Length: 355
Image (tube, rainbow, N blue to C red; front, side, top):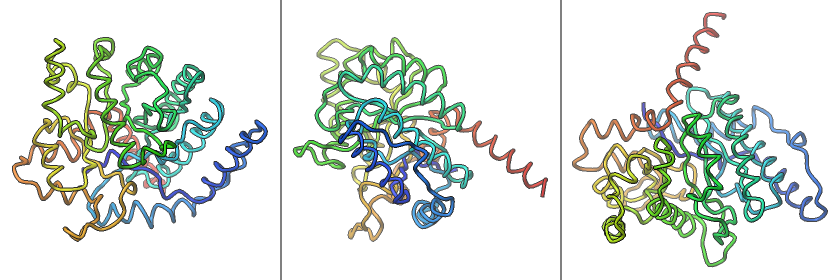
């Protein structure tokens, strides 16, 4: 099974964005709330969005399953207050759950967390614990997105290793689910979103982890850095050297048992570097489809985000490593995934027998 661990519902029906616009405007103008009950999206709208978008490309590229989350840039945690973020996260996650219900063989949910910056951070972490538990135990999700910068481009929060996040990590360990560390939009004009803010966020989060003892406190915590880890593979020697200068353990001991990287790297030499520098067991197949880049690469004639094609073109990747990257690692890191798939298969068999 080929499992894409990084997909977003970037083609969601327009009604979702319209509800969000109304929510933000109402709060900013008067502090009013817009009820989630005012959002109406039919199943046919969801089917159309998926069948003409993600599902079509899955079929064309030969991938089987996508771990599916709300649009990362649209998380936009800086808007409103902690209640604004909670309502938005629940609406977004419920929509992902409906996608998974309509296409159970092709999508499994990964949830957005209701984070907020500033003084609301601690409260929003507690809300994130509750929303993660709801999504995992009630909706069958297998992971979450964790934003290292809920101020959206200004880094006005403590590092992810701060104890304010510990209640969330405790719940993640209890539920045995990983987090993909993924920034949202950038409202900082000096930080373009997908090529600056995203990759800088990955790199900054990696360094936060390197300079901490987080994994001594949570030895089974699992985190994923998207977009190939930002600058990490290219500057692996720098990170190794700084850790050595500071008397910290080698990265192979202190980081790699807990941190994984995805393959959202959109050219062959970059992908080759990723898999040359990092052990294959630390790399999970992903495309970010449909996401940051949607056009065709004139050098290959394939879409930039067709990362399966790029991996298939690599030299020196053993068959065992290829299978691990394409699916085995996802089943290990997302520990609940196999159980969810078996449960769905059993439910499908019962439904078939009842016909």
